[in-house]
Amino acid sequence: MGEDMLAGVRGWLDTSGRFLELRVARTLRRAGAQVQRSFSYIDAISGAQREGDVLAHFHWTGLQAVPCSLTAVVEAKSGDKYPWVAFYDKTQTRLGDLETWFYFAHGPFVGITEPLFELWVGMEPLDITQVATHTVAAHTKQTSLNPANDAVRQVLSAAASVRQRYLERQSHDRVGLVLMPLIVTAAPLVKCMLDSDGQVKLEEVDCFHVWGSTAGGERRRVYVLSESRLPQFAAALKSLARAADVTCSA
Image (cartoon, rainbow, N blue to C red; front, top):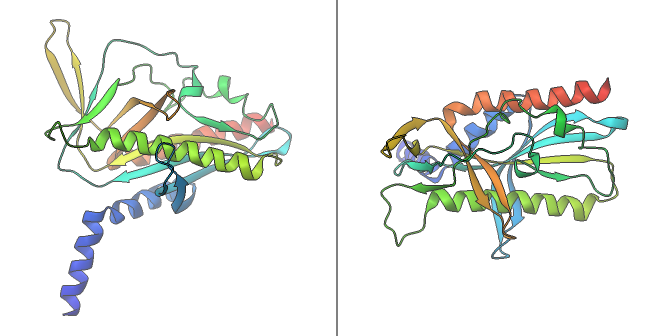
C-alpha cells in the first residue's frame, strides 16, 4: 500500500506540473538567482487572486549603492500533448526597445534603471529582432481554450501585478526592479513562417519570443522556453545582472 501510494503521488506531481516547477526553480537557483516558489498575484482581467509559479531574482548594486534586481516572473507549463506553434512574419523590431521586454519599477526615483537601456542592448537574450506575432497550441479544437495564448496572457498579468504591488508597498524605497515575463513549457515548440515561395516552413526550436497583449492593450514580449534551454537562458540573465553591477560600481 505504501509503495502504491507513493507511486500515485509521484504520478500526480508529474502530471500536475509540480515536478517541472521544482526543476525550474532548481535550475534558476543554480545559476545564482534568489528563488521564490509560489507567489500570489491579482489577475489584471478578472481581478481574481491567482498563484504564480516562480520568481527568480538576479541581484546587483546600482548607481548610488541602490539595490536592484532583474526578476524573472516564471510560469511553468507541464502539458506536452499539444505542440506550441509560433507564427512569424518578416517584421523586425528594434533591439533598443527595452520597454517591451521588461516591466520597470523604481518608485519615485530616477536614474536607477535608465543606464540599462544602453548597457543591455544586444546582449543575450536581448539580441532578438524577430518576434512571433502569436502562438497557438496545435491540434486543439477551435472552440476550446488555447493553452499557449492563455499562458502568455497569464504571465503578463503576473508580471504587471508584481510590479503594481511593488509600487504600492515600496514607493519610497530606493530599489530598482526589472521584471521579465518567462514561460518554461514541456510542450514541443515549433516556429512557423512562409518561405520566399509562399510555402509553409516549420522548424522545431527550443525557444521563441512572442508578442502578448496586456490588460491595457499594450504589446509586450514574452520568452517561451523548453526546459532544456533554461540553463543557458538563466546564465544569460546572470550575465545581464553582472554587467549592470560592474558598470554601476565602476
